[in-house]
Length: 161
Image (cartoon, rainbow, N blue to C red; front, side, top):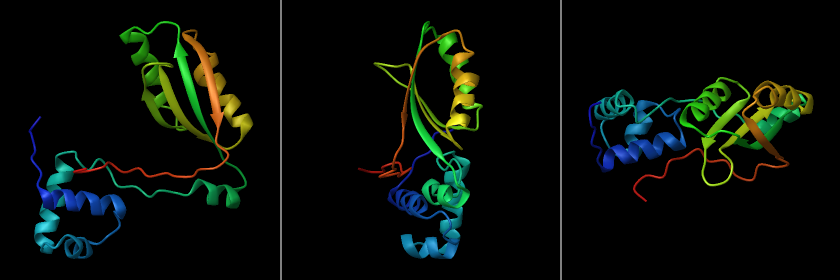
């Protein structure tokens, strides 16, 4: 893998894109004080290097729940009976394939995994629980915390801090 170096301008570009990835190249160039061709070339280099993984729209689940009439977010702690590398990899590979699993973290100490899941309602959570946890003989303990309100959500990587 080719090593990439970044400078202060690259960091400004990354910061600006984390705030609003929908900016036009012209607007982004103005914001970081570079020419549009330079901006385009640098952003392409950052994408090609994998520093910009993808650009997505962040939806507001609370507002969507009001419109669609449902929505349940849970933070779930999972402990496995056997924590060998193969068992950890197998569990992780299975849960990350499920669309209801928004985030998956392998953690230590404490549980082996923490998942952030979003489902339509409690019956959908029960189905997810049976599909991912109950059917896995290696899952020892499941502890779920249900979100009553999202106070903050910032999917931002701190740069140069």
